[in-house]
Every structure is written in C-alpha cells, then in structure tokens.
Length: 74
Image (cartoon, rainbow, N blue to C red; front, top):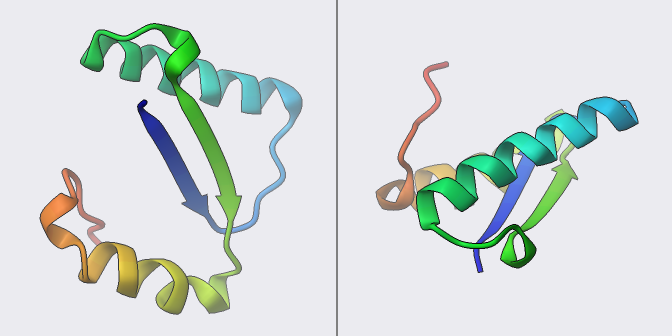
C-alpha cells in the first residue's frame, strides 16, 4: 500500500525524467499517508490516444467519478 497507476498518451521519458517523476510521486504519497517509501508502488502505463476513451476516460473517469480528487478540464 499505496499503489499509484499513471496512464498517459505514449511519450518516451528519459531515465532522469522517469526518476524525477517517481521520486516526486513517492515523496507526495509517503507524506500524505505517513508511510515508508518501501511500501509505495508506481506503475506508468502508456495508452494510445485512440484507445483513451474506451480504456481510461469512460471506465476510470466517468464511471468512477466519485473517486476523483481532480477532474480533467478539457
């Protein structure tokens, strides 16, 4: 616990960008939950733009809106 899953349009991150992303998310999660870094897991999952509506927007944003703490404004 806790697990973070980031879905995004495909974009290649450098090793440095990936490390910075993971470090920032880990810091925020450990601070918010008061947990150790070792219990945090993070997945970074590219989703093709043409699949976004079916794989992400519909099932995770529209159908689970009660779980969202930030909603997209587009």
